[in-house]
Amino acid sequence: MLLNLTNALKSALKVPQRTFFNGLSFKKTYNGHKVIGYTQRQLYDVVSNIDEYKNFIPYCTHSIVVKTQNINNRNKKLTAILGVGFDGYDETYASEVICERPGFVRAEAAPNESLFKQLSTVWELTPHHDSPSTHCNLNFHLEFEFSSFIYSQLANVFFDNVSTLMVDAFERRCYTLYGPPAPPILTIKKTD
Image 1 (cartoon, helix red, strand yellow):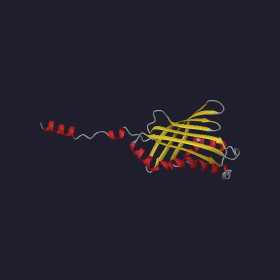
Image 2 (tube, rainbow, N blue to C red):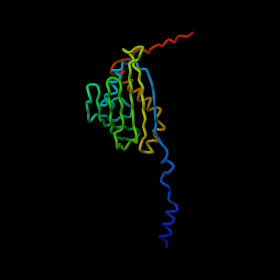
Image 3 (cartoon, one colour):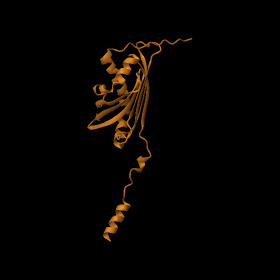
Image 4 (cartoon, rainbow, N blue to C red):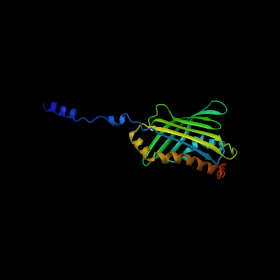
């Protein structure tokens, strides 16, 4: 009888399994546009060189391309292993990357990746119409959702900074490799 009473109490006091969070999405999205004082080719060469990410991207602990498939002389598909670390948390994930020379790079977390439910980064680079030999337009899209509730909460705190840090890191890498950026393009608007 005591055993039945104990089981009845356990069943009555059973805590629901996070049903409050099950329907919520923790997906984060960032879209940005910026005119960069480097050429399309220079920025593409930095963005598509994943093996070097560990040397300049904040929180990237290691980066290595483990497979390269040349689609044609301008396009390739890469598989890369990347490590991220922050405040005692260290994780590794695989990424599938499509590089289309001279102006497109898309990276997505590999299928069945446990760290992310979804990760997609798109870089679109075009020569700037006023100064194509010195400037390019960067359209940047970042969308991700962690599999872990804890990582999702950390992302809520740092998301705005991380997306800005990413773009800034690539600009700093261009500076390291190519020197100072071209001066900003002055736009004169005609008034009536």
